Image 1: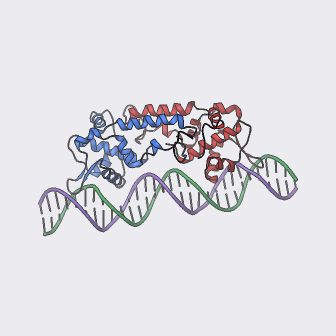
Image 2: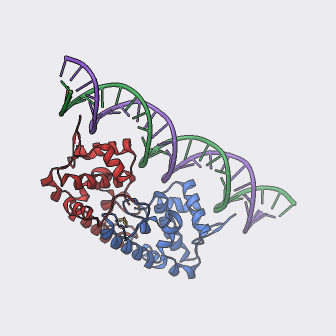
Amino acid sequence: MFSKSCKYGIKATLYIAQKSQHDERVSLKEIAAAINSPIAFTAKILQILSKAMIINSTKGPNGGFEIDKTRLSKTSIHQIVQAIDGNHLFEDCVLGLNSCNANEPCPMHNEFVNIQKQLMESLATSNLLDVAMDLNLGLTVLKR
Amino acid sequence: MFSKSCKYGIKATLYIAQKSQHDERVSLKEIAAAINSPIAFTAKILQILSKAMIINSTKGPNGGFEIDKTRLSKTSIHQIVQAIDGNHLFEDCVLGLNSCNANEPCPMHNEFVNIQKQLMESLATSNLLDVAMDLNLGLTVLKR
DNA sequence: TTTATATCGGACAAAATTCTCTTAATATAA
DNA sequence: TTATATTAAGAGAATTTTGTCCGATATAAA
Ligand code: FES
Ligand code: FES
């Protein structure tokens, strides 16, 4: 479904979101430990998210990553997926035809346009604040 | 969503199903041409499907691949996916935690169990006969 | 029985993804 | 100003996925 990079990216962003809620800036090392991911690889993904303006990074002592509190409720998981994996999951033909085209559909088109739409909706209507809340309450986890 | 192998496998099986409906056995070369896939790689995938008893293979002159007509309506696309990609898409945690577990869910669990279920249902209730029909009628295509 | 034709199976090659290492750039604080 | 802590960036290694090649095996027909 999602690439490994994307999974790390989502988990990392959610962890940063949780901490940003309490005005805490977090380091790469802390993030990687919290989501159980390879440190240097996680750094690459955070760079992508930083360039996509989904997270902010600060170099130097006491540096690290954070998200503007005001943006938490305005950022969706869809934006993270889009930045890392692109829109392929939502827009491409599920059987790999050169494009998804309702006029000349593949045999799975009709079944899948709904699923793709629902997937998209689900990710697009999500927001980091809600997810961070659940994390704080211990209702969900990023690691196990 | 699906691996490339799986996409080839689905398309190949659907093509074989369409031909088997008219008692035609098809060769590897014909299949690869019909679904626009690399020949030798397609052969590997057909071997998997053959071992999984989803298709039958026959060596020698006039050999090739076919599906028992009586089995067309009893074989689902889910079986193909399962044989090639396994059940990961349906059963694994979408964020890559070591297992999907409702007691200690990841932040996307609640949104995704439904989507996974729907995906599974959709694939499990499909059958090769119905799909072959649409292909025959020209309502759908395997190549473009 | 021989020959031609097709899939099977194993080894290998290429490409994409995942992951690591090292150095540079930058910001903070002493 | 200098030392230190942190991310950025690039090169490259390891792994997985995708794809190729060729000889072995089985089948059918001559
Ligand atoms: S054409 Fe294949 S999913 Fe739309
Ligand atoms: S725990 Fe992640 S999808 Fe169920």
